Amino acid sequence: MMLHIRPLSDALGAEVAGVDWTQPISDTTVSAIKDAFLTYHLVCLRSEPLTPAAFAQVSRYFGEPQIQLLRNMRVEEVPEVSVFNSTYKSAEDKPADLLFDRRSGWHTDDSYFAVPAKVTLLQALEIPEHGGETRFCNARAAYEDLSTDMKARLDGLRAVHSYDTMRAPARAMKRTKEEAEETPDVVHPLIRTHDETGQKALYFNSNRTDRILEMEREASDALLDQIHTHMTQPQYQYHHAWRVGDVLMWDNRSVTHSVNMDFPPGRHRIHQRILLKGSVPA
Ligand SMILES: [Fe+2]
Image 1 (cartoon, rainbow, N blue to C red):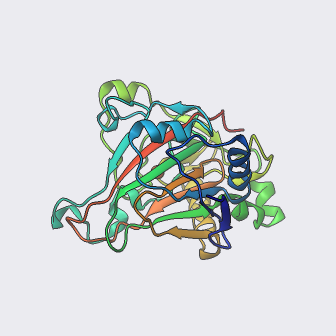
Image 2: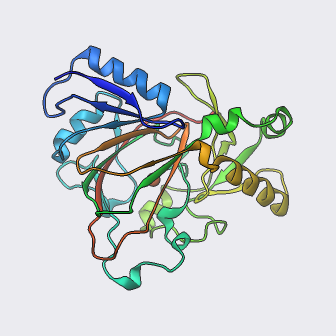
């Protein structure tokens, strides 16, 4: 098999084909994929569905897996892998306005932690025939396109990230008392410098960023709304139509994501997820 890497869109993303992920991978292949990942912010590893153990093995080529917050989603025998079932069990589970499904909100994973995961690996195990795409925004390009004045205005601003914020239309998943104790509010810069590439990106999570420090709520809301509108413009977006087995590996330091939750009730949509340990955003 031959390693083949090609861009997926003008906005971000590259496809990686020609690798059998059930076999050991050479250093040359890993290094080519890492380069593509830093260039395109997201890679799609075409694969067959993997066992949780094989999936964890793949993730270790790219970093160190981190045990995820919500205990009830962890796979017992491989706890660094969590299973996400986004199937609508019945018609009543699907809101008329999809914004009221939490997964529709643009976010970067786990920004409610002081040290958020740098990378997410998500593999499709079952997907609906249509709908259910995961959408991505290039937060680095969105930052780059800001006016000089706006860059200067945002420079040095810091924002509170909470497990939940009333700014988001839909509520976060329930936490146990133990999980709540592990997730107090944290503060992150609004502009984040990538610790590997040195590139700057907007670091904003519409499900978790609650307010900008040292700013009145009204002014903070207006500025966060403006950032949200800017970074979700179509030219920054790539929508991934899943094939079963696809592993998407994305950079939480430079992209945000959301889900097109428009698919029929009863159609299974199931993924397994691994997060890789990151560093303090700066
Ligand atoms: Fe996510």
